[in-house]
Amino acid sequence: MEKIQSVATSENGGSQEEIKKVDGSACGYETLHQLLRENLRPDIFQEVSRLLLGLNGGRALESIALPDPAKAVSIKHEFDLQAFRFNADKELLREPHIVRVGLIQNSISLPTTAPFLDQKRAIYKKLEPMIDAAGASGVNVLCLQEAWMMPFAFCTREKRWCEFAEPINGESTQFLQGLAKKYNMVIVSPILERDVNHGETIWNTAVVIGNSGNVIGKHRKNHIPRVGDFNESTYYMEGDTGHPVFETAFGKIAINICYGRHHPLNWMAFGLNGAEIVFNPSATVGELSEPMWPIEARNAAIANSYFVGSINRVGTETFPNPFTSGDGKPQHSDFGHFYGSSYFSAPDASCTPSLSRHRDGLLITDMDLNLCRQLKDKWGFRMTARYEVYELLLHQYLRPDFEPQVISDPLLHKKC
Image 1 (cartoon, helix red, strand yellow):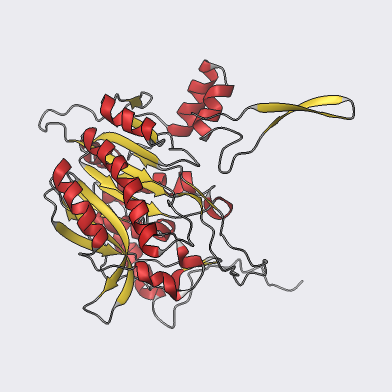
Image 2 (cartoon, rainbow, N blue to C red; image 1 turned 180 degrees about the vertical axis):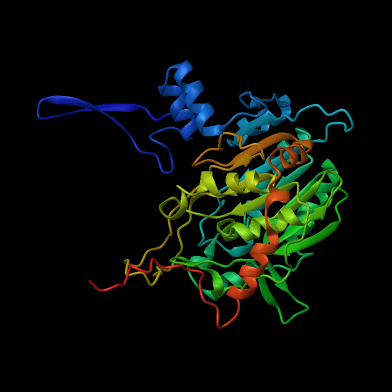
């Protein structure tokens, strides 16, 4: 944990404490959780943590010990490493179904002005020891961040960044296939896909690599943002793969890519298809979305009775040519700080502390997937959802002659 040293300054004869700012830190601390822990009395921190993170089975979330080789790699390569456990109640007819799941957040390795091939290889070099740490820790399913194999250049609207696009069986998939097989690990790899069989169309895609090194399948991003710098339709459009759930050796997983987390029906569809773990690989900056970040995925986990892994990249990526957003702001060469803060949410409303806001990180969590059904039984959301009512509303809404169901006060417009 990195805390920035404070300095005293004097103003009008008095003194005040100021904390030097570090790009991406929370008042000199890596995370909000660490800031609170270091500045609150233990009993107060415990209660604040309960309110912010919830309880798992009536208890605070447990941290778990990781093997020394994994910790040594994290120290050598200076990435945040945290690990926790979600428990479920013991059942009489089912054995526990415990899966060890990991998330990786990272910054790019070279400036965006470096040759593209050098940029790609440098990111591989950075990611490999982090994946090795996950493998040494016995991770069964690992997910990387959105478009991990390149800078998040979609803000620029320059077509030359399309050179990073790869076919499903391209270089990044081949790089991860060997690691998946080596560590008996399912790896979710979000890439910029070039569909060579369909006119070299480009998609924002997550490739699911099986623990035997095989490609299980892919999912293409369902919702494309058109918000300021995130006008990504310059590069790709809405995906055509629906809401697939991938049955792996360790559980049923799905991928809700980035902007899709703002759409409740998108989350719901993965749940209706039977997902037990849904990953949300993202790239988002503080000024735009940070107040929403701790809420949306956690709410989805609760509403849909599955686990959610939220991943955001870290760092500020500066591009050679300034660009504008069409929002009246001056041209700029970056679109803000990617604030990391990756975390896991559980269907019982508990969640892990977040990874660092400004450092690379690996978050590992043991989760008993039995908790998914236990929460379905407890709350009965599937049985009480009234899907037929929503179906009727949506059917009507899609008609050109749709009129909202609004009942006005008859006296509202009555003249005196």
